[in-house]
Length: 566
Image (tube, rainbow, N blue to C red; front, side, top):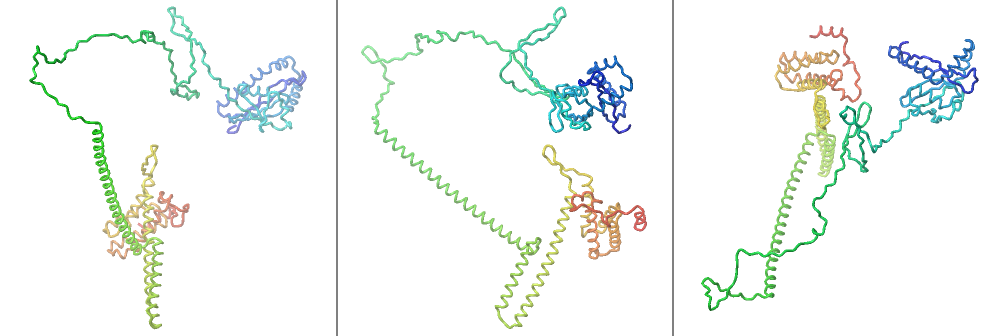
């Protein structure tokens, strides 16, 4: 077939130890499932698997074939025996882990689990020691058990989990002697040398290594060094002669001789250059001690004076720094108070936030109460008091109207700031984080489109510009929106044509203010529509849904509109 899974059945025979000599061969039906044998390669794999199973059957049960070849019963009797044997087989579904593929097979219920495991290992080409069997509930299937212990009913398919066990890793042990083949001798025969290996008990250093991607083996760098011979000392260090000092006496004649000579009768001594030295007064120990005390007191006075001057200088610098800090703090406080007062005045003159307007309303209420109290304290007739309260009410109404105007002005200013910030963020380049931790700016087609539309919107916001420049801006807007035909773009084109006509007639700017405001709002709506500006998708509060004004017209409607409106 095509994409459907194909199956082939091969009937093999296994030896039944419990049957008699006539029916000692029980057929086992092995069903092999293959994925869509549509290609020649899949067909070759299927037939090769079938041939392997037949060969496995010949290896396992050679006696059954020999017995059947000697005595061949009639064909009807063989078919009847096969039918009886097939009815006595049990089906087993094997899930091989961790590869997660299934194998369906039929076995004699009197077979032991060791024989079943041997058949599965031969069929799947897996070593016998690496295959473990257990039921789906986790019950181990030991080799001494039989299949009959796991079947409650004959027609139920037994589900078995086969696990591939990892081979036990054997730790490598370096032999004490290895054979090394070196270059051949004179006759050309290789020379084998036995090398003695001395193992070290210490842990070797790690020098790195690498891993083979083909088989996952890890290789480590290593080094070796033969045992060095100890150096022989040429000089005997440990003996009696080196421990004993040799003494020797020698006479030395100096280069210059000196001497003294006293005067006598037979010897003339010249005394022209002699000097008479008289002894100084004797300086006693008490005098030395008193002199030391006097000098010590002088040194102490000098040191104390030095410490005192240092302390005075420290006090002076601390006072000077404190005065400077106080002066700076005073100046800073005055500056902050002045800024706070100026900010308070600015908040009263140009309030922006809700807190500013709440403060204005509170001040107005306090002013009203003070004025009412002043009017009642001044006294007068009831008519005078009523007239004064009426004038006060008119003043309060005017002040409330002024506050409402300021509120409208503040709302429009805040709205303009939010629109400006949103458009700048929409047209700004994207920032990507690199592997080095730096940010780079990336300009994409989406940001380029948004930047062009924002530039046109900022051009529409300009006032007091020449008429020719204004016409260029609105024509660019017209050509930009004509790419999309919908009710919104048609309104923009109509307003552009109207302003172009009025500007060409020389109308004043004050008469065009309302028209230009409508054009700005419609073009802002065009910018914030994701169908016309993909960069506006991330700035939608809710998923965008196309409405009647932004729904694109059909080609026929667009062609008809192009004929009517140039």
